[in-house]
Image 1 (cartoon, rainbow, N blue to C red):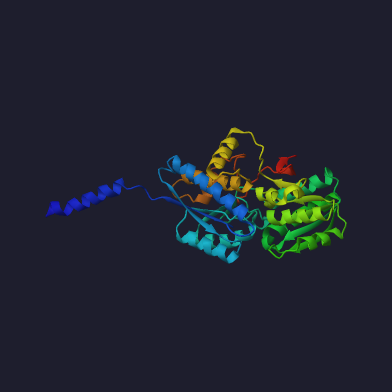
Image 2 (image 1 turned 90 degrees about the vertical axis):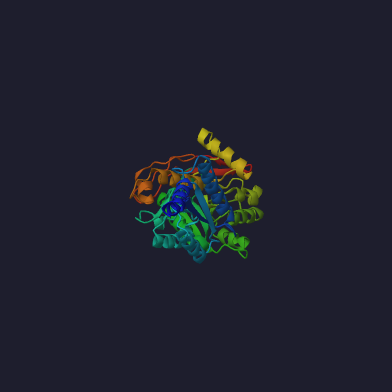
Length: 367
């Protein structure tokens, strides 16, 4: 009876010893449908590639990584619900969201569950300098907006700008506008018009351009995503407006060029991603990304890849009793595709920005 009693127990212990360790669950949240799907899909691809490469190399500490992907549809309620579902699934971290408008609802749900959020591309200044569970691998909007304002005033001799900004991502667009205005006005420039609109199928881009034209500006600034920026540029071209065209890093996806065509040639965009980078690290990433997804990476892909790799690296570096946030803040820098990922004590990153323009259907870094 004693032998019969211990045999199943011994077998079960041996089985447990041979079982693979529990996987590390990692969540992703981004807009995978609707007008910002280009951003969300590129982010998901970068996230997925980083995880696949980590799993191919044996995972983290012998543990495989399991991914859970959620679509926030650019709707705050859905974003919060998606984050709650990831918290319930006991993810180690959430990579995302991809837009600033979704950052606060995602963070609210993640904070309630004690889960760290690492955003690839949410750059709202409203979240800068806060001791919370929101971290990011890119600079906030003040870096990009002030760089754009200085360049346009000093290098392009722009003295007046008419601005259209999208209220559906106000957490980002209003901050970008405020930072641009501050620098541009301090230099001696004038904001001739500030026009708010809501991105959607019913948006009348032609009417908005005509409204901007009445102030007779030297340049148009579109603080909007790729779809709306492309449509604004097309309307400006049809009206033969002649103003310089400026947009923001949010719009700088490959879809902007695809939709805008010749109308976006000459448009200026700030961004943190150099598509002409010849470094071995970036070229290796680019080749792997192109092979996996049959397309070239964009800034959202790079941001998500960097955020995911930094998170996995931090999980591997973490010590007993140390939170993931603490490891990310204290045990960096982490390897990035083009730049090292360095986080300050609030989880905010400083990342070199570029002025780019579109020439013959591609982004070219000019400063």
